[in-house]
Length: 260
Image (cartoon, rainbow, N blue to C red; front, side, top):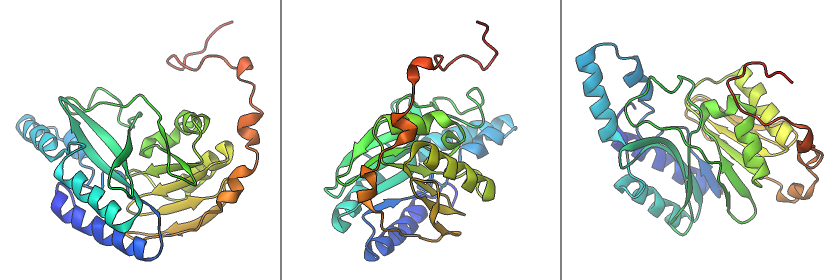
């Protein structure tokens, strides 16, 4: 529900509790689930007065990392003895981030990821809306977890950076496109990194095995739960260990052809 953190928080809590009752130990929500992912409404508004109002509203709906709703979900993770990844619009000083926060069973913030790539580009966003620049990986016991958000999945580099950082599972909260084409992309990300991949979206959920096969799918507003075989993590990741980075060019630039 756009802009309604109270209603969304209640709905998310209901779903998280239901998942925990079914035995889930890691629960992952969609992108921007707390405020309803509203940045596109701000970007698309053309009326100057209405635009200014939306920019201000956008800033007010953002949540600090120690804000009341984050405290609420930290306490929920503690009460249910689970790890929880929550997607939300974060405010930190003058900056705003599209954030996925990993909350632990002790009620603490394990870590957070700031979305690094924006489908809409970087010069049309509300003031202060900032891309991230890091790909952290977090140890949650049987798994090391990395996070990317929505459009990040359409580029190979974020998932590979997380894999090189040691991620066994890559969580991808999303609000944008979904469907068959997205399933194929996510299968490739799993296969090329030999990592478990979990895609969470209001319309579609996917849990993918390390070989890219689909372990489970979920539909609109539904939940899907899978037991992962962590013993599988001992298998060699040939797509990583057989790399020859000494033969690669530095990755960067605008995409224009580089001459020898």
